Image (cartoon, rainbow, N blue to C red):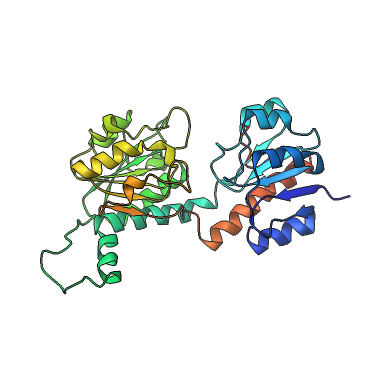
Length: 319
């Protein structure tokens, strides 16, 4: 008899087809996010959950899950929405989808870096609002990227992918992460032992660190003060790494020249202070919004579930 699987959001047809082939799968054609209480109540009906960032499973929810539920796999690289420690204590392995996101997110980071450096949002608004009066030699002057120092906060797979792309623009790569990477991964990038040191050496800061109690609001007034005045700040990681009030103040004062943001704390809500700023490029969490990425993420998430029911370790286990 096939194991029963709940897929909590509408995913690519390829993911649906594989899930339906291999499991007694319940899909979500309406794409209505499940609440935490929903997931607890339904756990007695399913052997596995394939969840997304929109589904929250904190400690109190994990403790209430039915013994029937044996594995949780998330359609994301981040897994802060699932209390993996509580799941481990309950004997539930948790897996993520860490590889499919890499290229797509790195591309969005470069889009934001380029858009911020060349003031693309302002130019687009001039056209859309029919306010462009014609070419002028000093209009909308931005900055070239060549020779600029790119600081990468978090040098995992995505951070390294951004570095490879930035080298094609002749940028100098600096990074900070919890541990220094081996030379084969650094590829000449300059390591900084502290975030403050990195920011002092960053004409452009690109954020790729994971969300955790240690990194929450680590981009704040104190750390932003270390940036060279007028630096660019890009975030494609998690919104809660940034203290919004502090970044908005820095954008207003000119300490930060431009921000490119794909993620926000409390999304889909976002700080209204960003909306009145000309020097902010805002995207609605599009980092992995490429069909190739979504298909690969679905396969990775299902690989975890397949492995568990085959009696094997999860290939992308996080607990």
